Image (cartoon, rainbow, N blue to C red; front, side, top):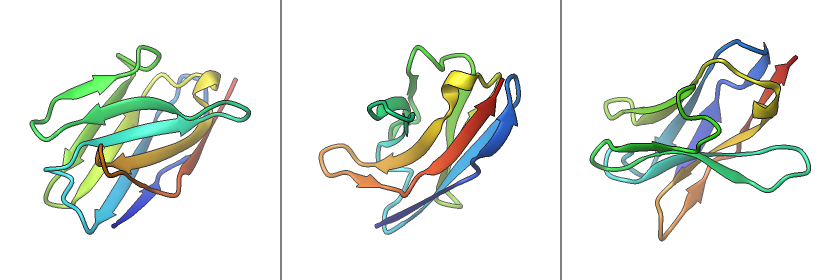
Length: 113
């Protein structure tokens, strides 16, 4: 299983970014998929998830600003991030599965004030 996250970068506060996680070895349409993030000096935290039925859930800190989605034909999961804040600065990781977990390598998002 491989998860390749991309789309990170530097953006000003209020801006938008779209992260993508390309999966191989698993099907994103049948696995719970999630995004996590880890800010400098802090523990990794959960951001958003999408489960097999297409149900989504978000951390309260990003609800209303971030949207997780998946493209079964491309076997990718995306995270659309709008109204970004400096506190969203972190390395963002894609995770597949729940009992048995697989992690991508992370992509850095930096939001300047």
